[in-house]
Amino acid sequence: MEPTRNPRVKICCIQSIEEAWLAIKYGASALGLVSEMPSGPGPISEELIKEIAAIIPPGIASVLLTSKTDTKKILEQQRRCGVNTIQIVDRLEKGSYQDFRDAMPGISIIQVIHVSGEESIEEALSVSPHVSGILLDSGDQSLPVKKLGGTGRTHDWNISRKIRELVSIPIFLAGGLTPNNVTEAIQQVQPFGVDVCSGVRTKGKLDKAKISVFFAKVMEVHHEPLGIFKSYFES
Image 1 (cartoon, rainbow, N blue to C red):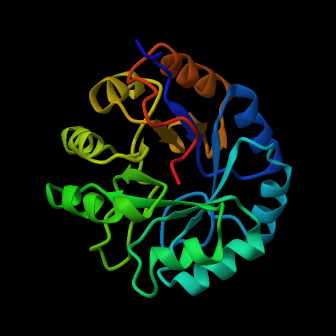
Image 2 (image 1 turned 90 degrees about the vertical axis):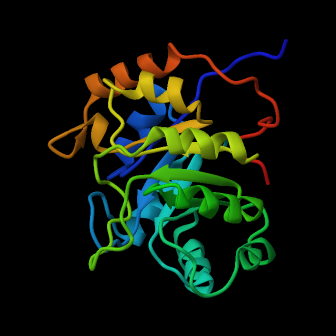
Image 3 (image 1 turned 90 degrees about the horizontal axis):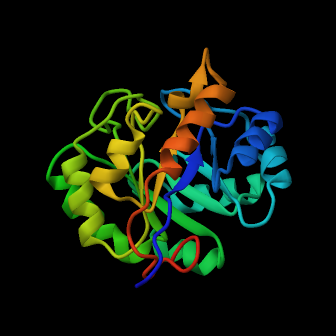
């Protein structure tokens, strides 16, 4: 029998070097660094993203959240920020995922799918062969001012579960996760990892008590054989 594991935890919306070390101390496998967004919490300057990414130890993902939709501009942003992972929170409109592979060997690409209905399953299936992982969130790209994350609300986990069952790359679950619902979310979706921002914050700042409880709840849940997930991301 293969061993079971706990889901990885990505702490998003990191605001400072101090917050980065706090998240690492509690066991975060990835830190989300939010660049300019049309809406939502957590954006910081590219200069600060670069400073934080530089101190993150090997083995922990420094994740740039970008709302850019042009691969050339995303590549330029990655070079300025020095991160090892890119999280694309909108749909690519210019260029291709292969452009990233050609220009940035060794850099992981996470594509966000904002789960709005059954159509999100097809969207996930279409991008899964081209990226390192998929993050399922609760944004809305159809609004005049797009919501591309940090909504603090959940989506239909039944759809997320279907996506997780159909794709063969790591799935992260995001959207409204808190210490109160993360156990249920993991049990229902069985993701490779979970992503949290506002759920472990108080008045916008990382809350040690909430982080501690969140990690305790995650560590209580064991699921899914290691299977293909022998490294942090499949390349």
